[in-house]
Structure formats: structure tokens, C-alpha cells
Image (tube, rainbow, N blue to C red; front, side):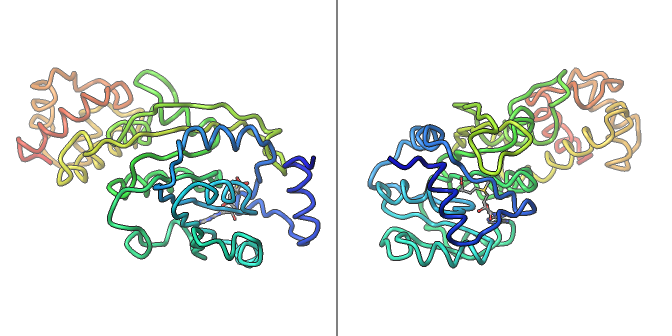
Length: 283
Ligand code: SAM
């Protein structure tokens, strides 16, 4: 029986396709990782799915086997041509979009109800893609995403760790990691230099703060992590351009010492501080 590795290598040879590093083209060659992704997706025939970067389509063909509809967004025109010519091209469940996931507008292709999202993300764009997906959160029930291990660690980390940052807070405000699978470089061709992690992120019905207050929270988190060496008192005073005493009294009222650094605040403290800044008309 042909292995997935042999199939990927033969497909690349036959189509004379050379994977492009710039587009993060590391194709999955271990069947058991595809099985892990399918387990996390928990597919049913009613499911509609968005896939970021179908590549050669070997995960995609498994998705269309079960799901009602799969929208696949692929940036590379050579891969788009190949997918169209493959058996997927005529599959009734398969909808291919030749586009950049960082540019496409969700309303151009997503239905009004929630869908599942899957992607083996190109490493160089995983962080901006994640922020984009959180902006589109009302379209998704959950995300199953493969990314560089370091990015996955940042998402799940808390105060007092080096990995804790804007991405950690933003993810934890929008959802919760429910599963994590570790993936070695051997699972890809070509082999990347880094380890990868698949995360399943369940999105909350609503973020932990009202939608209209998200921009203020975003500004606060950016200011707090933007200058890691600054105290919170300093970072917030220069961000908001307000009187230092005013800022320090809001911090003290929330029980936060103004000499603390942003990276020591928990997500709950960020939420409380954002509310307090709004109520005191500082933010
Ligand atoms: N899903 C395939 C797999 O698991 O073997 C391929 C995954 S490969 C890591 C990433 C895929 O995303 C490639 O097919 C690449 O061309 C595509 N891609 C890269 N940047 C993209 C972008 N901005 N928008 C959409 N697709 C992109």
C-alpha cells in the first residue's frame, strides 16, 4: 500500500512542483497526524468547514469525504490549478477560493451560521492569521490549527512566563484551548526546522468583555506588552497621554501596584483594568 509520504513525493515529482519556503509549504506526510486533525474536528455530514491552505489536498480529500461543504482558501496559483485538475475539483462539497487568507473578506464566502475552521498554517503568518480569526469569531464554532510550537506555547501561557504576551491574552479573551497535539518535524515534507503543535481552540459565544470595549482592551494589552521594561504606570501614562496621578489612582483602585510590569497582569486583571479605565473616562 502506498504511504502518504510516497504519495506526496510522487505528486510533487509529477507536477514538477517545488515547495516554496516563503509560503510555508511544508506538506503533511504522516497519516496519523491527519487522523489526529480529523479526530479534533469531530466531523459529521452536516458540517461546513473552512480550510486555510489546502496545499496538495490530502487533508482536504478526507474532509470532503464526510462534510457537507469545504471552503478551501489557497494563495498559490500552481496549487490552485492542481487542485482544480484533481478529483477534488469536481467534488460537489469542495469550494476552492484562490485568495490570501489575510486579505479575503469573510462575508464573501462564509454562510450566516457557524462553521468549523481547520488549517496547517504557514509559520510566517500564523500570528496575524490568529488575530484575524478572533476578529471573525462569530463565524466559527471552533478552530483546529497547526502552528509552530512556540506560537502555540504563547497562546496558552500565563503571567510570569516569557511566552506570555498580547497573543496569549487575546486568545484567552476569545476562547479556550481544549486539546493540544505535539507534532515532530518528520511529519512534514520538506521537514521544517521547528516542532509544531495542533491546537483545538473552542471559541466562547461572546468574548469575555462586551464587543464595543474590545478596542480599548486591545490598546491596553498592546501598551502593557509594548514596552516590557516600563512600569504599568509609565506605559499607560504615555499610551493614554493622561495625568500620571490619574492613571495611578485607577490602577490602585483595582489593587494593581503602578510599578508592576504589564507582563505580570493576569487576563482577569487586564479585563478589570480595561473596565476601570473606561469608567474613569481615562480610556
Ligand atoms: N494543508 C496542506 C498540508 O497540511 O499538507 C498544506 C499546508 S502548508 C503548511 C500551508 C499552505 O498554506 C500551503 O498550501 C500554502 O501555499 C498556503 N498558504 C500560504 N500562505 C497563504 C495565505 N496567505 N493564504 C492562503 N493560503 C496560504
